[in-house]
Length: 308
Image: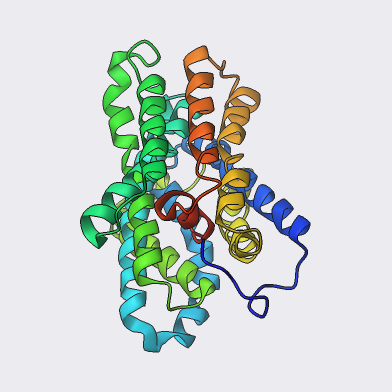
C-alpha cells in the first residue's frame, strides 16, 4: 500500500474516515433496491444505468474542463466509463429475475476480472495472496450460481450479469494505470461521463415509455439512484479511503455485500439460502485475507477506486 504523506491527507480523523467508508459502502449496497424498484415500473435496464451516472456527469463536468490538458487520461476515463456503463446493464437485468443476494455475490467477482485484465493488458502480475483471494471468489460465484441454487432458465441471465464485474474490473485497471495523474474528482467525472456517453445511443433509440417510471412519486427513485448510490458515496469514498489505507478500506467496504443481502430480504422478501450465505462468507473471507500484505489488484485498488 502506497504511503500517503501527512501533508496530502485530508484533515479528518481516522475514525470518521472509517465511518465514511462504511457509510459509502452501505450506499453502494442499496443499488438493488433502487434498480429493481425502477425496472418494476417499466424502466429499461439501460435507462436505470444511465440515471445512476448522469447526475455525477453533469455536476462534475466543470472539473473535467479544468483538467482538459490531461486529455489523454480523460479519454481513458471516458473509455472505462463506457465499458462500465454498458456492463452495468447486465447487473440491472439480472436483478429483475434473480435474488439480490445472488447477483451481489456475482458482482463481487470483480477482483477476479481485475486480476486477469491487469495481468493480460497492463503486465501487472498478481501476488499469491491475490490469487488465493480470487480463487475463493470464484468458488463463491460457482456456489451462488450453481444449478441447485438458480433455475436452469436463468443461467443465461446469470452469465450476462458478469458483464458488470468485468466492466468494473476494467475500470479499476484504467484507474490505477492511466488515471492516477489526474485529481480524484476528475476521475469520477471522466468515468461518469463515459458511462453516460456509452449508454446514450440506447437511450436515444428507446421508446419514451421505457425511460420514465409510471408514477410521478417514483422520480425520487431516479434521484436516489444518482445521489444515494453514486455521487454522494463516491465523493465520501474518495475522501475517506486514502486516510484509512487500502487494506482497511477493503475490509470496511466489504459491508456492501451483506447490505445487498439485507435489501433482498427486507425489501423484496427474498429468503437467504445456505449456498448464498456460504458464498457471502467466502467473498468476505477473500477480502479479509488481503489485509496484512500489499495486494495491489485486490485491496490496494479498492481503496483507490471511487467509481462503484
